Length: 538
Ligand code: ATP
Ligand code: MN
Image 1 (cartoon, protein in one colour):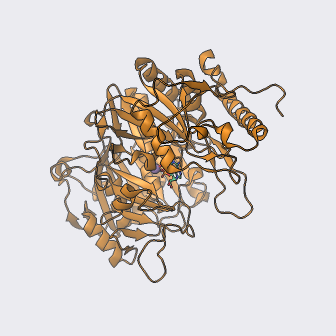
Image 2 (spheres, helix red, strand yellow; image 1 turned 135 degrees about the horizontal axis):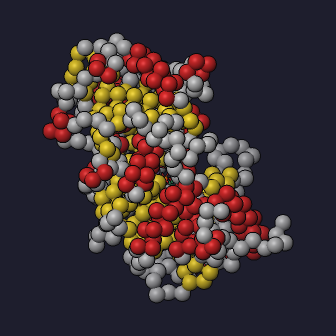
Image 3 (spheres, protein in one colour; image 1 turned 90 degrees about the horizontal axis):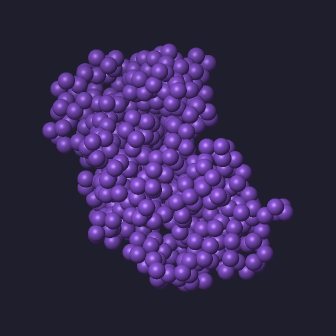
């Protein structure tokens, strides 16, 4: 076996059952970019970022994500269609098969870690079949120093073999591709998919188990940034609601764009980089993200304007989910190390395609718990012709698919935090529709949303009047700097007020129905924060 690059002299791939021909250890971004181009797997765009296609999979495949059911997980994991069990024996066999598949191949190895707070550091070793996936790991996970690399032992191992397909008949998978997490062996096994989000969210799932379960630390699907006074803001939200976009703020230091932990006195990033959506990206609207796409960054599934290597960010012909991965230091005012103090403001982002929820509202502690457990957003139908109805989604804790434990476990931790920190403001932000439902109204401008959250963070929304929403009870401010007052109450923005009231009832009924499954575990105060559905609503 030939080995290149910097490594811990004790690290031994053959001892792990991996008899590869060449191992490239911890190569630089430049070397990985160069290798990818040489192999014909990618090209550079005009700003020097490496552009690749992830192949058949351009998103995660939740139905093919499994967790090994063993002594550690059996009684703690919330088994069901989110956490699908896999047998330890089948895992061992598949692990050996993947190792055999790597035999004689060239591999790219990366030593990295998760959790910026040293107290919770989790060392990760990733073995990739393709160099650009290794670049992704370099960009997204935290980067140990050269000295650390020489001594670091991995806590967790990720084997990523996009070219390996399982045989569902004998391997116990649903189809050829799979992501399987094994807490006893501390391994994530990925096969059949080159979509890099499987790696990123694989580790997120692991931390969502370990931190709350072993350390009583709340793990969160949120972005975080910090003001000049050290005040921390969290932005929770499901995919596409604005976590990455809104946390990139020239006035505030970025802590992280997607995954964080909240321990006593510390909000810390799990990651060392960002993974931003690129659809419709522009230098004018999102300069920080646009400028982060430079040498060392990875662009996935974009296309070029014909005859150039200039990215056509409008093109969703490969997927809506075009993405840019870059290390956090590509954002000018990133905070390193990426952690701060207990938060002062918490924003729940929802992209409400019904146009019912106000652009900003203040939540009581009980309402905060209710909305956290509900995790409401709407997916819009995208570009399909004739599809106008938005798809309502409730995803507990704004990240149900990433949670190994029952959602109530996370909600309890948040509830405890909010009790310990009564000074924390919790806001619900609608980054979605205004003036009517999807198709009639339009999406609230990013400019207004930014002004709204800036006002909230700078204390400009305290000492003013608020009025409760008639159905949701959440408090709507009567004014906000740099935002027209008439848009703050969503009912004003609808030309047909009765249609608004009817739609609000419809949405309230969806909330109540969704909450039924949690009702037995929620106390009366939380239940009292539910929207009011009129008895005769149809
Ligand atoms: P993921 O979990 O998939 O990473 P995310 O929450 O980070 O998702 P973003 O990547 O920030 O979501 O995507 C939000 C998208 O919505 C961006 O493309 C942004 O330009 C667009 N957008 C349009 N209007 C708004 C608005 N008012 N507020 C926030 N985002 C908006
Ligand atoms: Mn994001």
